[in-house]
Each structure stands twice: as structure tokens, then as C-alpha cells.
Length: 349
View (spheres, helix red, strand yellow):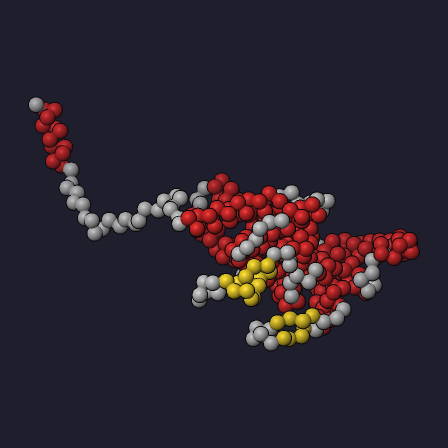
């Protein structure tokens, strides 16, 4: 009896719960693989198969196998804008994720720029027209511009705010240090990928796949960070890549209102080199005075780029045996200059 009484009292002591259907917010059930009409099912299946085919080709990209893989890419059946966008997105994403072969991917983009041409679907009628046609080049330019603006938007600043709040919540020193190291590694990796992608844009510009306005925005973004060694080295390497093209002739571009506008690339190029020259002078003086500056390696690297410009973009290698002799003869002078500069820095420190 006591057992029955205790059980009864236990149930009576429980608060009464009233179910209110108005408070219960239930959404519609979302299936993992929802039903699709036959037409859309076939399109989705082909897009996924196309994506796997392209990835299977691009995963094997090396400079030695480029010609063979190019033939396989050209044999793909591309009949719509959606399929063409898959090709453009994967080419840029692979170049972004595997920067060892950035110039190889740029060459692939160059060879495939007119390989595929699809009709543009009119949004109002939903019907395809014979004209105009869209090729891979326009899709590539759109994708590259989107990726660049994601980099230029400075996502690191927003991430620092979010990570700062997470680190403030972490109370234990061990957990705080672990999160801090994890965030630092993630930031360094994202930064390296961003710099490599800007180099990839330089390779595209050298092959005339992106416009001068795009290249100009890249240099403006880099030169906004004069104390950042990675960005300054990237600017120097980009000038070595595209400097000869910028220094010679003019570049035709389209302005925002659709009217053709001619950009004098030579004036822009002289502005870049002048800014970098002033940067080198300031950092040399700061390094001698023992103040904060770019490293000696970065300064000498930028000076080498300016020297390359003064020679008219002619490398010693392109001059044959005479160029090799000139390069060997210039080694003592360069070594003496660098040695004197290093000793001056050491004496002041």
C-alpha cells in the first residue's frame, strides 16, 4: 500500500502540462532527395556528372600533361549557360586551390576561351535565341571579379571581431591558446591563397583574358598595404609578370556606362614603379636606423624588379652567352652592395 501511495503522490505532484498547438512552430519536412520532374532530374544529373568529369580532368593537371587534358576538355558537351558556368567555376576554383600550377590553369583558360559557345536564355520569355552567344571567356571574367572582390572586401577584419569574441569566452589558458593557434593557422592559409590568386590574375592579364581595369584594381589593393611584406612581394612579382605589357602600348577597356574608355597603361605603370621606388627608399632608411621596416629580402627583391624594368624587360638568359657573362660579371657588384648594406644595418643595430 505504501508503494502505491508514493507512486500516486509522485504523479499528483507533477505539474500539469498543457499542449498549445499555436506555440509549436513546425516547418515543412525537407526531404534529402526531393522529387523532381523528369526534365529537371535529367539536367541535375548531367550537371553533377559534368562536374565529376571536369574535376577528374583538372585533378590530373600538370605542365607536362596539359595538351592531353586540353583535348579531353574540348570534347565535353556544353549546351547551356548553367553547364558553361560549371566549367568556368571549376577552372577558377582549381586555380585558387592549387596555386602550384597557376600559370598552367591560366593557359588552359586561354586555350578554352572560345571552345564553348552557348545561346543566352532570355529571362522574360525563357526561350533561347540564335543571337547573342556567350563563350567561356565572359564567364571566367565574372568569376574572377567575384573572387577578387571577396578578397578585397577584407574578410579578415570581420573574422578578427568574431574570433575575438570567441577567445574572450574561452576561460582556460589551454583552450585559449589552442583556439588562438587554430585561428592564426586559418588566417595565414587564407592570406596565402589570396596572394596566390592575385598572381593568377596577373597570369590571366598577360594572356589578355582579363581587362586592364581588373589589373589596376589588383595593384591598388596591394599598394594600400605598404607595410605588408607579402603584399609588397606580390606587387613586385606581378610587375615582373605583366610589367612589359603595361609599359608598352595602351589597353582598351569598357567603362561603367558602356562607352569605350582608353586607359593609358604606361602612365599607370610609371605610377606603380614610382610608388615602389619610394617604398624601397623609405624601408632602406628605416632598416639602417633600426626602425620597423620590410625585411632585407623583400627590399632586394623589389630592387631586382626595378632593375629588370631598367633593362627594358630583357633577362640575362634571353641574351644568350653574352647575357650569362653579364650576369656573372654583375655578381660581385651586387654582392658588394648587399654586403655593405647589411654591415651598415648591423652597425646601427
